[in-house]
Length: 331
Ligand code: OGA
Ligand code: NI
Image 1 (spheres, rainbow, N blue to C red):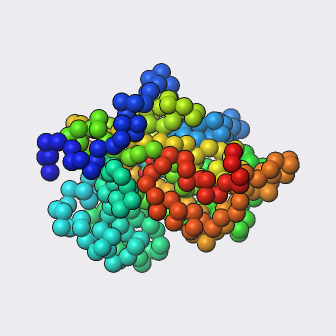
Image 2 (cartoon, rainbow, N blue to C red):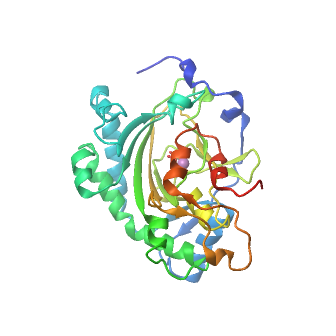
């Protein structure tokens, strides 16, 4: 809208602003070449990254680069629609809760808003997709989702093997990979980027997330538990993988779901397209028996996945606090 200054409701408290964070410019998250994904070395680097970083970038991942370009273009097309077109997909107007246009995260409960719009697309079925997803981005988003399936299974295969889980059976499959959600994120150019955030500190609740970003940058990942943050520099053709809370729970804390946030940008509109690989809502999340076989104590109690996500969406972004919902005791 060409606003000259940031409206008050987007002013973040000082402690959430980037001016208060220490950005480590000499550090980056691991970059993994997936061409030989089954080789013991590559598998080890994936599992090590999941344990020690919770975030990594991959190249030669097998998802065609044209597919990535097309979904990025589709995202720009959607957000370039006139406001009244986009509003058809708002919470109030959308004919289904599987398609939702939103701003910030949960505005009704947030003390300060985040500088971001998004279209969230939950995949139910082919029929629902063709009936309800917006025509300007439907085919491209579906193609991105489908073209990522082979990669999703490869990553899953490697990650569970690293936990000593020998087979993904009929119970494990829906617990790990039961549903998909794609968000089209739009971070418009911001008049006072230093006063707000694109996305506040949070961890994803997914099993893992495949994140496609454009070449603008701005995503930051927390290093350890201090105030040090690492910028995830865009690498053309790469995808970012991050472990979510569900896999942290299933691995009993071995794999880490790391806090991340996005800085607002004063000169460019940024987009990103996360594909959340989630458990089925009906699945029960709990540590795998194989992980506890060495006598390790479970850190998390069984929770219904739908209850866990409901909890996530009833509060503002609050770093790593969502996972307390499943924690046993205080640690
Ligand atoms: C998210 C997220 C990061 C980005 O949508 O959960 O963390 O770079 N996005 O947009
Ligand atoms: Ni996220």
